[in-house]
Length: 84
Picture (cartoon, rainbow, N blue to C red):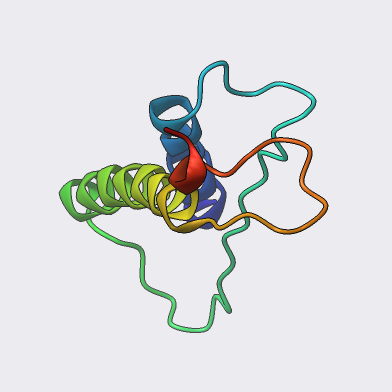
C-alpha cells in the first residue's frame, strides 16, 4: 500500500514540471515496487518526507531531461537546447 502511495506522490512531480499535465500525450506513468519482505512500515513522518522527496525528484528529473535533450535528425520539434 505504501508503494502505491509513493507512486501517487511521485506523480505530483508531473504537475510541477509539465503544463498541462496528465494529458493523453505526456506518458505519465510511475512505478513503485517493494519485495515486502522486511515486514516494516515507515513511520508517518518519514513517509511524508519520502513522498515529498519523490515528487521533487520527479519534477527535477523531467526538467533535467528537457534541459539535456539534444536534437535528432528526424525531430518535428526542436529540443529546448537549440531554441534561441
